[in-house]
Length: 318
Image 1: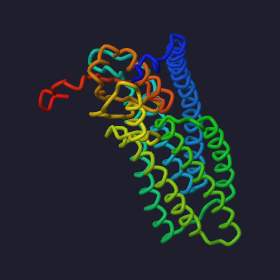
Image 2: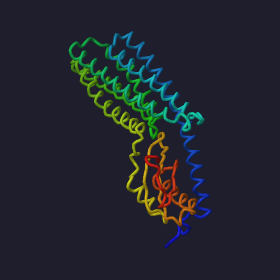
Image 3: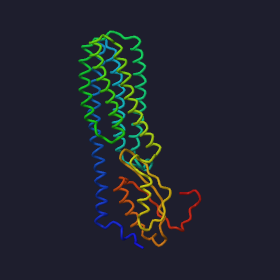
Image 4: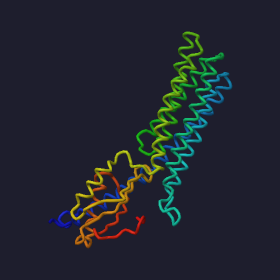
């Protein structure tokens, strides 16, 4: 029989493993700092456009601009919440919060998803009202202000694009909603100027609502999965089990759990049953298992208990 030492990582491989962990931690911190800078810029841009639309809507008597400004005010609060969550998630762990404040990012994503659903309901109600009672609109001024808002929203989208953080995804979806709203208003302004049919605005608003609902549902679902400690989407539990049982000396796996702590941070806990003569090789078995889990699934927070085949469990205690 082969011994675990034949497959245990060499000293150089172990050093590479620790270096990989250090690089992942460094990238995580750098990513968080970049996300803070992006969110701050997006918050400033959104606030400027919201003020512009409030003033423009008042001066032009444009209900569309005023409604969009109200939409953007909710986005300002969402972006502020996301920024606050990022700041808290960087606070160190302590004796009461051993994982620190990482889950605040997920709570922020959940709040943003629910807020988006609420915004969509408000947009749909307003669209029905406008369809039944369309009013006169200063189309030229409305289009000019909306175009400025669209350009600014596209800039903000570029700032937030490409992040895997659920928190940033929530903020990104808010800006997507603003961008789609601006495009819809511009299209509506063109059609209304051409045909005079003012109900076009309401129809476009309902179309935008459907798109926002899809994104908000996905964000809310992912956040709830994290809070329920569901298995990450990229992890195949059967593949994890097979990977661990292939390590020489391991005969069985039980109490296997994999979950997400925060975006991009995954954890695993398991009990490994090993052949009685192999119990003394704990370090080699752990090194082999942990290295494979990091390489294959990006799981770098592991808690693994090694047991002999004769170990007696204490009832329901795990």
